[in-house]
Length: 173
Image 1 (cartoon, helix red, strand yellow):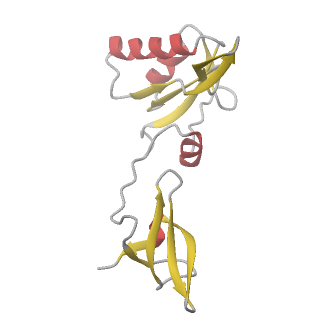
Image 2: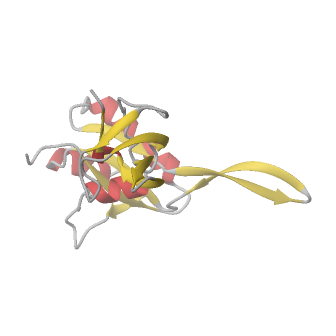
Image 3: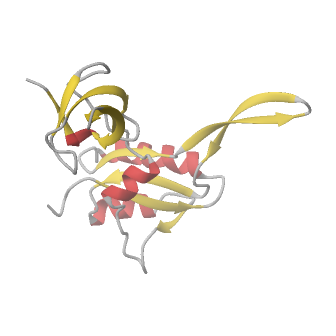
């Protein structure tokens, strides 16, 4: 699947990230290249800054000097991005852009994956995988952010809380 949408990291002059992102979006619009580009992001986070004894929320760039672009890499898409004012190049060895791996995308929090589970706190579940496979337990807490669930399992007459991956348990029929 050579022409799949992948995330690429574009290096920019510091302070030009938002301008580069909007210029890429404009170029895609003007050249009608929507089939090659999915998304352009300047990852930011909100931090609380204390200045002159005043607290205020400030939006900070997580990766200053970089813009993330989800696109299909072709000569046309490369040319569009490469020729945007403020872009110094793609991240990768030499002039070869290297897409982010699925793990990097996940770790960087570039894409938010919505995880749906068919059980809730208080439900009885069966452990379907791992060293506790076959055990029955009750869901205490679900942490979708980290993909884990805390289940209380009865072992040798004692209730033991265990943390499992979401895909290690299934609801009881």
